Length: 430
Image (cartoon, rainbow, N blue to C red):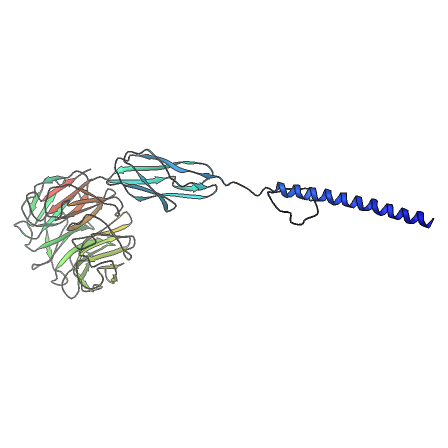
């Protein structure tokens, strides 16, 4: 019995061993199969089948970014997506697609890096998230206007220094000549007006009043409610008053000489001297966005100063030592032009921080804003008019060679006056 029992245990042990081996073999096969499905090439030692498999090799979709273009017949347009991937657009192009696609769910943002020469292009449907090929970005381009200028005859061959528009009338002032004011309802036909013989350098309109200032003479301010009959007024100081503007119910004038190089007046008749930020040659002053901004042609370190009230002024640092001649405000932007040296245009959204712009080198003397356009005129160089819709990209215009010194906008018309040469007025309506 003992032997039989022993033999039975041996047989049972063999059977159990074989069963265990078969189970291990099956487990090994299942494990190898799972590893094969998951793309693995080695066995990790796992000996228990889980009955699942995983595919880790996924493919990320990417989509092209593009759209349509209308109105472009000029060269030089460059687009960007996400501030990179520059794409040059040829004249006459009607569609575009960036070279680099965007991953599914990724953001895109199309902008204009460089405007086409003589054109202003804007972007619609510019940004979003890519979930398919983007084809609805729209680039709309329009030619910058003020392209055609017509020469006009002035009343006298004076050195016309400044022009403004107000109450349906263009008014220009001169530094010399018999009659140093001329007026026109349309910029074409002009009438001489007799005034005191000071060297009138700037004229503005505000609060139903024309106000002019002079660099020399007995009385260096004059006022007129109609542009025809003028009254001499005493300046705060006998300084060389170069420019006058109106804003925030206040006339403000700046000078290039004297102890106090700013003066202010609420009515154009009584003036109060104010201290400038620095004793510079302040050439021009304007008002915009709640701020007076003045620029200088020479002097100390800072050639810009700003004031919220015309009384307290703060010096502002700008790049270079340029001879800034004129400043204006329009479309949320201050724009200044210079007569010489390296930088000829600078722009600022707040009057404090300025960015220089590359334009044709010329002796730019005046800049104005009207009808969605900045227009500057000069008295030297090949092209003496330049225009811009954004203050950054400028296009030159061919006009009569004259010493253009001032430009304004009114009644749908740009009008410029000159110091010398044959025709001393020109107009542009387009």
